[in-house]
Amino acid sequence: GAGVSQTPSNKVTEKGKYVELRCDPISGHTALYWYRQSLGQGPEFLIYFQGTGAADDSGLPNDRFFAVRPEGSVSTLKIQRTERGDSAVYLCASSLDTLTGELFFGEGSRLTVL
Amino acid sequence: QKEVEQDPGPLSVPEGAIVSLNCTYSNSAFQYFMWYRQYSRKGPELLMYTYSSGNKEDGRFTAQVDKSSKYISLFIRDSQPSDSATYLCAMKRGSGTYKYIFGTGTRLKVLA
Image (cartoon, rainbow over all chains, first blue to last red; front, side, top):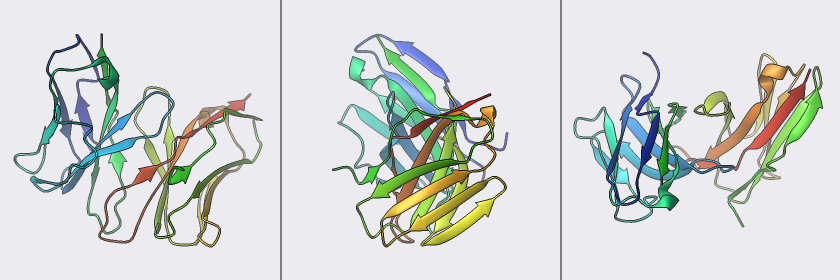
């Protein structure tokens, strides 16, 4: 498809488990973002990639969260030792460049930690 | 104080009404502004994108930016029940920066 693709769309896990969320950006978009959206809130910035490198990971809440983008396209957000407070929708967005920076979002991965 | 403030609503209007949605912000360096529409359990969909001050129109939607007042607006003319969604504003500083800051979103209900 032409849009940003995220998998899984829903993930239910138990506290303490490890989770991976995948994002496939729009073809040709070099910039990739992860945002987290809690119920009734706007998206909050987690991490930004320009190409393969994480240019800014200042939004990651703690060291249980990690993201990679090894080939400059698909990205994976990894969460270790999940906690109930990690429950949220994790949104991925991509952008052609950062000069103008129109962000195009995927449908999100809804994470529920029991 | 949050950098971007947005009334969460809900805002209920009759079909056909003109809707005004607003955000205020505190950082005078913001230059790029976007409005997104988000249906329940869906990702945000880009509606309008504007740079600096002024107006931009696209069909039934008009985006306004007043940098002197640090205030942005989205107007929806002839509102339809299908416009019922949450509307998010987002903004960032100048070119070369990348981090968009989002408002909390305003829930809009257009009643048939």
